[in-house]
Image 1 (cartoon, rainbow, N blue to C red):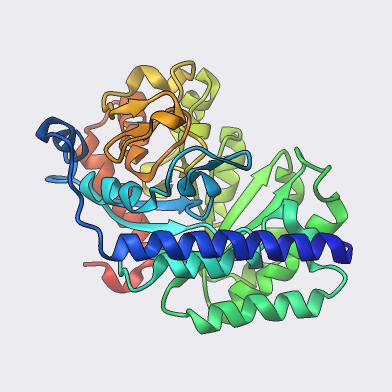
Image 2 (image 1 turned 90 degrees about the horizontal axis):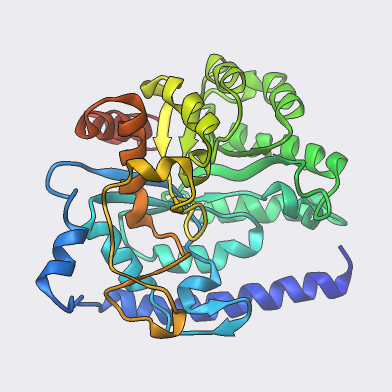
Length: 348
C-alpha cells in the first residue's frame, strides 16, 4: 500500500471516529421515545422469554451515521439502532473490527456499555495494510488488544476471501491470516473467522496451527457445504449463521443438518438481511416498521436494505422453521454456545 493510500485510510478512519463520537454522546444520554405503543411492542416481542447475542455487527459502518455511498441521507441513528436491539431481546453485541483503523471508532462506541464487546484483527481483503511494515501493523493490533483487554473477546475478522482477490492477492491473505493466529495464541482468545471460496487453504492453515488455538473460534457468515461445516466442527470450530447463510434452498438444507450445539447467531449488520427473495424468507414471522426511502428516516423505523442487530430474531425464526424445533429451545442453545466461547465466566 503506498503512502497516499495509507493517508487516505487514516483520514477515513478519523472521519468515522469523529462521527461516532458525536453519535455516542447522544447514545449515553438517550431516552428513547417511541412514536406509539404498537411500534414498541414489535421490538419487545422476544425480550420477555429469550436472550440473544449478536456475534457480528459492523456498527462502525457509515450507514449508521446516515451516510450511504458517501452521501448523507439522514442524521446519525446508532443510539436508536442499539436501543431497538436491547428492546428486542439482545443481551450482548460483538462489534466486528476488520482493520486496525476500525479500532478507534469501535472502542468509542463501546464506551462504558457492558453489553458491547469487540473483535480485533484484519479482514483478508485488507491484509495489504500489513505491508510495508508487518511488524508495526502487528504491534498496533497488539496494543489495541492490550489497551482494551476487558472488551476484546476474539481475534478477527480474519481468514481468506478468494472471491475478492482484486482487493488482496492470495499469497498476502494466506501470509497474514496465519500471522494473526499468533494473536489468538498470545492473548488466549478465540477467532472470529471469514472464509469465502477458500475452504481448502483456510482449513489447512487452521489445522497446522491447532495446537496454538485452544479456544478455537467461529466461522462467521457460513454458506459452505455440509462437508465443510462437518470438517470445521471436527476441528472444534463453531458455525456462525446470518441472513447470507440462508439465501438458497441448498443453504437451508445444509444449515438444517448442522448440530445445534455448534451454531451461533449473527446479523453481520448492516449487511446480510433476509430479503423477500431469499429461500429463508418464508420462515420469517417478525416484522419491523420500515421506511423505503432513506430520506424519510424517522427514529422509530428501520431502513429498507440496512440490516440491524434487532433482526437477529428473523435468523432464529428461519432456523426454527427449517429444523422443526421450538424457537425458545434453539434460542437458549445458541445463547449458551456463545457464552461458552466468548463469555465463559458468565456460564451458569
